[in-house]
Image 1 (tube, helix red, strand yellow):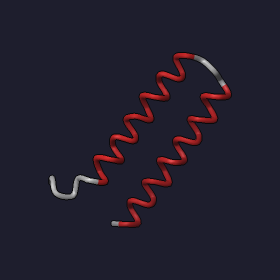
Image 2: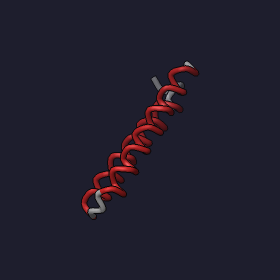
Image 3: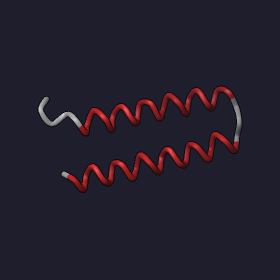
Length: 56
């Protein structure tokens, strides 16, 4: 269980880093919005899975 959380956190950090580099390399307003939405959904999913143990 702990290993799953660590792997998910590493994947989330990798996604955030990649999208951060991508956004600052191609500075477009629409790209900022889409990247923000993708990161919000990814962080929400991570948070939901992390604390969902009691709600099955």
